[in-house]
Length: 403
Image (cartoon, rainbow, N blue to C red; front, side, top):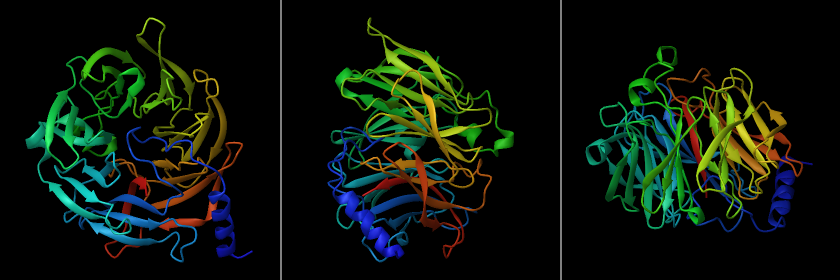
């Protein structure tokens, strides 16, 4: 069987697989894809910070003759930004994409021509508008974009949240409280009227080479917010540096998980019968793991953890949500970081750059793992997008979105 015949056969399987359960790790307000993905957007940092950063468009349509190739790049018009995360607006017509070292934030149109996104707005000094620096998570609300920030504008704590209209007008800012000043991720469970934020480290720390980091300059808290009032109602304590916030995808389920980067652990949080929340360590991932990303399967059966320092991805069975069990491991290459699981739960795209101050591999890529019905992971031998051979040289592939 030729490579193309195999790819077309896989496409036929996907087309008859039935409706998607969920598009994981996106805001519940984001419009869902109607079918299999065609484009993978990859946010990329010029590796030596001398040339402009960019957004790469990878063809992931199995029937396309350019499948698995970069078919377009969107020049950000500047260098040294440290592009990091991005997110769709609720109507899926725009991507908001920010940077951790510069003060720039970009809004891109993806609706006019999904294969050729274009920048429609650049905010040059987000700190001047918000009093905050280091936008991290882009969380779509109805007609709005909610963004977490790692620092205040001067690079020190506290971090916080800022809320914008979809076209980039600032609405309001919420800074973290003094007793929990560190910020990172955000996720909302609308039916519970609860929002949870997590904590990392500020600009003053992450801008330095990893060997110079102060490992005590980071958070160990998760904040529970009244979502409608945008007010903190509770502070939870975890192992150091809880990163991703992942609510259960089951409607009404009042629990979820986070990954502690410096605790090498998964933590479980849940609402009690009295209405408050508790958090407890649920799994040890192994010393020196540095769990950088945490993703879910659409059926809420598995959690996937990227172990950046151990170069493996772990799949954890969470059919008993508070007692995860290691189910499978996969080595996709050196230092896997970001993962993106497709809406049908059958594919996982993987990149291997975390931060330019933390990366220890010079070989950057985007790869694909297939997820079997049994939850086992297997690398795709045909899909391997090399991010070291751009005209401007190597680029650090980081965050991803599908369209």
